[in-house]
Length: 320
Image (cartoon, rainbow, N blue to C red; front, top):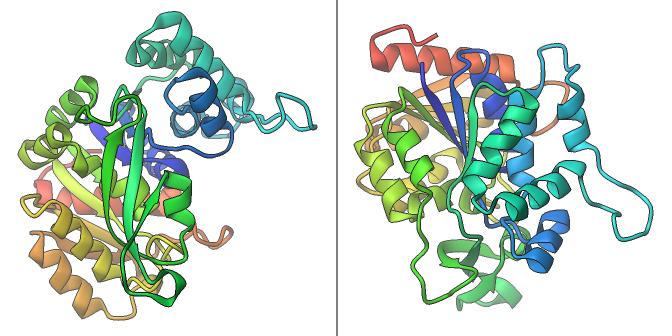
């Protein structure tokens, strides 16, 4: 089974850990709009793709079942202190060096996969760093929309995000382009998983690149959307589970989905979610997918079981 997961950050990391329990053929399609922390510094100083979310995906695919994968741990190790390296993760620096040495970020990431012994693949959603802009209402007590620029600023805004747009960070006049390897992976997949994660800045951004959105619409793969456990302050504060689906439908009305997975305890009005899922052609699957030991995180084992169920019901074959 060829599985593709789209997203970024901790949400994508969890999805990848879940998919590895179903198949070794996993491709991560990763957002490249991060402008904060170590990633933001390297992006600003070197002009490379922000490596943090890419590093997280590599680590998820490299981690052994017993958690004892040396390179996966080294990739995640972050320098302390107060010097020039403070705050940088080892994997971020290594990826930045690979990007500069190899030139092509897709080839560089393939080399990183080889170093880590990864059977799957990690590719960026675009080979150019992207900039996110959001139209936000409710700032300073006003309903007038304000424009917020940058992923970190959008994710932390106290207002309500209404819509977002993407720009090529290197050339604002150039149309953002999807990575060809990401488009191919989605087109050839058997299973595509979108979410969980920061809904606007890590999940919906993938349907904002025309070629990638077209691949998601046209692929014969079974498509599963995994909803967040709780609304995210700033981006989706006050959003109900069904509103997350509604926003996806508004952004990509032609996209049909096979299943929407949500944690049973995070859905106060199941009937509303059933209707929202039906509007995108999906069956809502309510299951206990929250990790009881980590607040706000999905449990990979439970998520894998739910994806297997959703995929089997909709595909009519056992993908595991």
